[in-house]
Length: 471
Picture 1: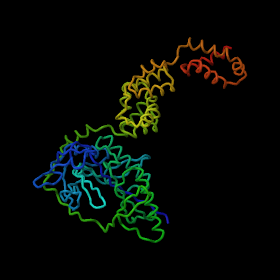
Picture 2 (picture 1 turned 60 degrees about the vertical axis):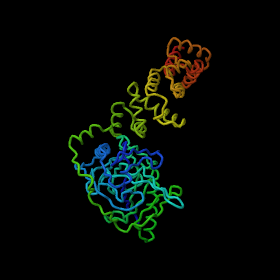
Picture 3 (picture 1 turned 180 degrees about the vertical axis):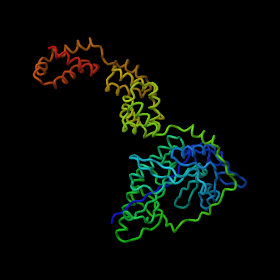
């Protein structure tokens, strides 16, 4: 039997703020356990929450980027459940009044995945389960979160991966979150079911919790499609349950059954009065939005004439695109800069185990190198050599001067060397006259050898062609 795959995704995203959602406690992922928690995070008696304005702004900007309709009445609710990672015995969230509703993300190819809602809430503490006990780190308790809930519009692992990556890239470019899945600042729960092809009746939904990479999302979905399909072919029922992904064995593993809907007993948060967000506040948040990846892509293609493939390579990492924008403040040839950045600098830094935040080559020096290359003062091969030396922090001009790498583009100097090469290769001239035009490349090679690689290749080929025509 053929089946249609139905996929919906819930994504929790930690917002990039200096302090927590309802307290002044700082948050640092790398901090020592239980050093970033105060009396509010620990729910000590008599403490009251206070809404983090910056978190609201970043959540608003995310709503705008995801084409959501914004509710200007900010209201919070209590989600009651008792667990060791929840100090208060409840979580402050937005069950009844989400900040944004009814948006979408457009994937490559034009398909729109609808977004049901985006709401704000606080994160829980983090548990560590040992053989004889469990430990709790309250550093994460109270960190601002947004939860983005999609409609069940995806029908393949590829679409799900594309959706998550597009969302991850969006919040990263907005600077709303660092979106580092491996650190848990962006966490995915995937809901997946199979139904008979063409049927309007949905199958039983299975949830896969806490997927921490784009690759794992794809692998987990592919496995779950196969697992559910095999069960249905045998005539067995799919159990509604929560599963986790075992990365080592590339399988999903049952965690717990889900019997119906859990009653969390939601009710309005009495300690936070509803806040009316003024039009001025909302528009001020909009005016401070960073340029989105789609906007950058359009600018790069229209203003610089870059190819879409090259643009996507630039946009894969926010810091690479930011570096390129800085380079273009001093650079004249965007295409050469883009090619050198994507094909050489990214790989060079990776080999040195460096990222763009610790890139020793300033954007100004990189732009200078591109301008020198574009002017024909050095060859592409020489530019790569210079780029390697620039890791030491020196300017390209100094490296070229110290190493004597400047390309020979003076016609008189080149013609003198060309005629010496031709005089030493009379047979090549005869072969050329007899129609063997490939010898021209050989002669260019001989000239490069004679000039120790300093001859301007394009000019050399042109002058050699002219001299051969004269003989």
